[in-house]
Image (cartoon, rainbow, N blue to C red; front, side, top):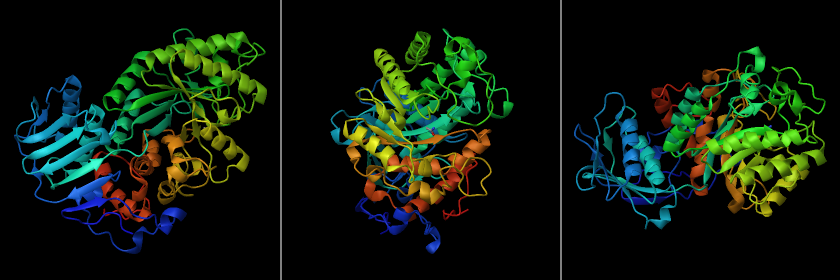
Length: 526
Ligand code: ACM
């Protein structure tokens, strides 16, 4: 069933039934040539509901952005940010003015709009202006991203008449980047934030440490970054972020309502730390730095008290730098740590996170130990993951641990699309665009109710992704599918309809200079 129809004056509540293609991941996009979509039909992620109809609003040289009533500095700041995004290099000035009476783009927070939740919004387009109403400034910002998509690619023009009422299905909609295997700068990561916010992604997880590099300066253990950061896969120079740079990223993302979740991977994936400080090794000897791509060979020394001073001081400094709730402590592939030691270590690391007032996030292997109350588990299994491993995760979810779903054979952005893809790996199989999109997070793990799913995240590991161009090629367009899976109602998830919305994003990605994979699954129009 076609999800979005041209519907003048008709309420469209997205209620399509998933088709066979969505269940199997088959790409059938080429059955018929795509009719041009209306601006409302193009929206990605698909909104909760659209009522299209009536004359719309045309931007002019004198269009202003209005805030109020009684809007504080935060709403004004959202207005300024939207003005910058909407105006483009040579569009109208779009000054932000106080008071919502009069023509223009009117931003209004209304605490009584309970139905919109923390990030939802209502956007009404009519000849006298565009109203965006939300319960929070974050909702206004998300609504502003919808407005961007309703405009022509070339910038401010005419928005058709109608109403969009929208809110996300899941609270956590994330993307991860590994800056440990190959180093990337804060500027490069900020660009990713800019590329993700149009699609309403709200979390950026940064994998800061691994065997090949330690990427964040820690005052109490300076050699971690100075020595442990000076290398990467393949022998390049690596690098690290100063605390000031990290703060700058957190602030930049935060202004766009994107939370940063930092990850210090422990007790495995720690060769860079072990190489930097001999005292962290059980035998007191520092191994050499590592530039290969093997996993599972390193471990912090669980029996040494010094290890816990390290964990405490590192996580303490990280907590102080990080306003978000979550600290990710890794916990994956600790093959060099005996199971009892692993559980004992994770007990103590989790206590430290709690002591600093944060919530633990960890890869799903923590389910096999003793996850602390409230710990969030990130599932990265795949269709061939053993029933026993899945059962552990399902039991943890039933015991109250929220899950982030990152199935490797769907949303690991470092998996090649096909054999011919240059960068990336294929240990979880090839992941074409249709397959990446075609699963339902609310029903993905049998026995896990949708209410236990906090959200979804698309990780990008960088063992074999060495440049920003390779990163873009692997992330785009698959990360847009992840954004829709996290935001749109279950009834809207339909590959054929999605593939057309995605095709309509092609010129927008081009205009942003994104070098995306022109997947044959998608009916690109140019
Ligand atoms: C992982 O891919 N080792 C979490």
